[in-house]
Amino acid sequence: MRVAIDIRKLHDYGIGTYVRNIVTQLARLDTAGEYVLICRPEDLDFTRTLGPNVRGVISLAGNYSLREQFSIPSIVRRERADVFHAPHYVLPPLVTCPAVVTIHDCIHLMFPQYLPSRLAYGYARTFMWIATHRSSHVLTVSEASKRDILRFYRIPPDKITVAYNAIDEQFHQLAAPEDIARTQERFQLHDPFVLYVGNIKPHKNVERLIEAFALVRTGPLANTKLLIIGDEISKYPTLRRAVRRGKLHKHVRFLGFVDDHTLAALYRLATVFAFPSLYEGFGLPPLEAMASGTPVVTSNVSSLPEVMGDAAILVDPREPTAIAHGLRRALLDTTLREQLRERGLVRAAHYSWPRTTETILRIYREVAAGR
Image (cartoon, rainbow, N blue to C red; front, side):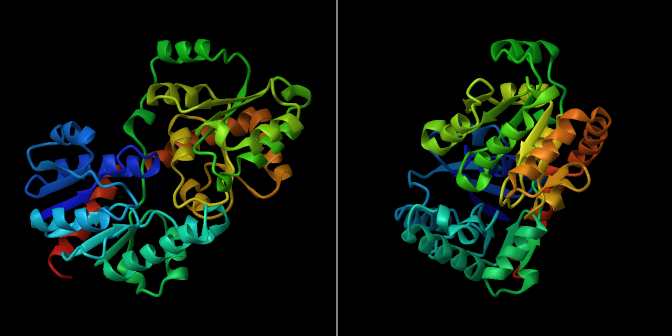
């Protein structure tokens, strides 16, 4: 069986984690199969590290471009793939072999107001229709996402298989004490702090998190800080304004992107991890925090209750007072924090890339066999 996989999003945060881990596991689990990875020129060396059954093929087409609608099908045909896997919702209609597509979430359909234009909404809706109707099978990352797909598109439920995400192995491993101390000194982290990790697009709800933090930072929590890891803050001036309104300029820090080793240390240094997102197909950052032994406060909507189980404090993300109440509980109650830490470690271990990849490999084989 020869499978072509589009890995051009290898360096995206969520989809990149998905792609990197499944291709690494496929190379180990299926040594008899052949894997053709459609990649950027700079990622060709990565494909060469995976094994003798993996081969990289370069594509210069941009994601969401007109060019990819022709170049990706051309590569798939030339490589004589038995199955093509699109790891996000864009499946070029000219792909003629059986196709598997992963739809991680329906964020663009659930929150069209956050898209830049009506054209972007039309693009997303059209290509998700193509993905759900022209593919042989659809993969998604939670039961909540499966329900959302079925809400928008009339396809048989058994055409969709849930294969949960997992996290990179580094977050399961203990960070070296010297790395943690170095990170603590680099960022001068000598007070308790709440950590947020992720992009800061509107549906991530970071503005309400800042409003909630302003309510929390009183009395015994007056020295607590909020660290926000993610996009460049210049893209979202509303967040700066929220900091000014709450007079929090000495207590809220925007660090932008950090490397993986620094991120692993920050997870372990944080007192509490906060993730009040309005919508997630899965939600990797709170799971990474759990694996790092950090108590989590997150939303009670979309996939997050399903993924987090009883290992997190769940709050209404639309109410800053509810977010603040959850943060206050986690920050002040040391017994609760220890319970959440223990449950979180168990919960994070429940998700496994080898197990997820075995499910994906089974789908490849069924699709290749015409079932």
